[in-house]
Structures are given as C-alpha cells and as structure tokens.
Length: 113
Image 1 (cartoon, rainbow, N blue to C red):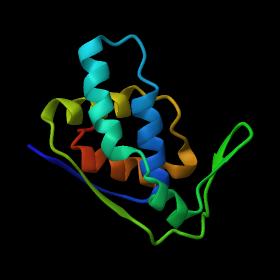
Image 2: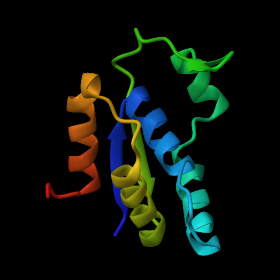
Image 3: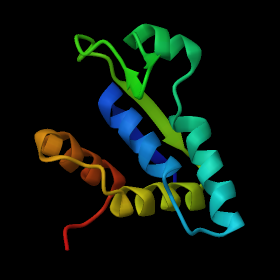
C-alpha cells in the first residue's frame, strides 16, 4: 500500500532527518531508506520555494512559509516501513512541535502504545 503524506516544511525536513539518522541497520534497510529519502529530500526548486539555506552548524528556512505543504507518496511498502521505524526511533522530536509530531504519527499510521 502506498504511503501518502501531506507535510509542511518542518515535518518534511524532520522526517528526512529521522530517516537519515538510522543507525545499526543492514544493507537492505539502507537501500529502502535511500528510496524513502528520494521522496522526502527537498529538490532545489522546493528548497528555493521555502527559502532553505545551509548555514554554519545546520540549516534554516523561511518560517513565514507556513502555508506550503508537500503531497508525497512512498509507493514501496518496505521503504514506507523504514520511514515508520525511523519516526519511532528518532530522538530529536521536541515538545514545542508536538502537534506536528502527532500529525506525522497519525499520517504514518502509527498507533499509540
């Protein structure tokens, strides 16, 4: 089943970071993560649209662009599974953005435990 996501810039960037930060995985998982990142990573045009910039020590983007959303589809079932696992394992979520994190959890189909 295709994983369909409607993400704002923060959600997309953070989910990309979550997938990119997977550790201790096998080569098959790395390949599936690459498929997911092909969808999640911002294209040059998308970076320009949100004012994304690499800066010393990280990156920034135009926070005023709150209305921008991205409709994404991850068709590969195993790649979608890797995204869910990465979301659950990622330790970089913060309480300030809990509503956005909760929305991601809902879109990923992850049930509360």
